[in-house]
Length: 350
Image (cartoon, rainbow, N blue to C red; front, side):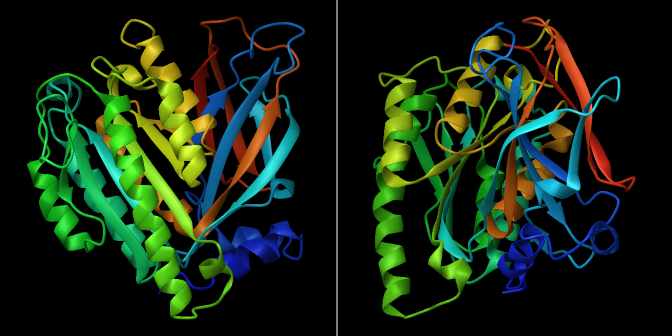
């Protein structure tokens, strides 16, 4: 359990007992990670309640490899001109040392073009390694969805490594990730959420029977990460059903958009429906929507999600006074106050 100190460290930072100077010593130059950026649907709509609001999910890591939720008091958000943006809301999302985790990867034919070098294989191995390193009390699985993938128990996906698999098995199974057929994202998610919810309830009870304690154990985690490059093209279920099931089971859905489903690429290749679907799926289940401009960055993004699931992250609603119009690209920076530690960000105004 190499991350046992995470929850305590995060809590200490959260109550302001560690100042900027100490934090600067703790964090390396690339210690911040942007797990997700979701502009609210009414971001560009004047006089709407969510006018100018964007949800950021920020993780951090110290130079010992410990992940934590950085306190908002030590973060600053600026637009492209360097203007400081107001923080409207904030919430620390705690990490867990126990839980159930599933990675669901798009296996439709479009992935041949989106990810020809198969970086999704490395991403699956990276996130599995992080979850396993968190503690012995996380169970995880790897699945792939498409209309050509079925393992009998699942009609719209196939299980490459079942819940409870070690990271080495998941890394090996990821070599079988394919690219064929259409995209039954919603149907596959509905199937998986049913099983994941039941499994998590039994797993949590088994840990309670062992009388394990500690803040990380008390906060049992339920997480589903979806990697996809497009909108649903073949489901009977609607997006609302996926959200309903996830919410009922307390499962956070983290989505990672690649290719046309990524908000990092220009308008010519970006598929608005795919981006909006992954944004809404994450926002309404308490998860994050992250994206990469190149699939070469996919393993690092997946690894960051794994670290955040264990160590926690900070969710911040930032408000633009004069947000750009719908369709315009928005850029800026998030930094540790008083330090050079920071990252650029960009998104498309909805």
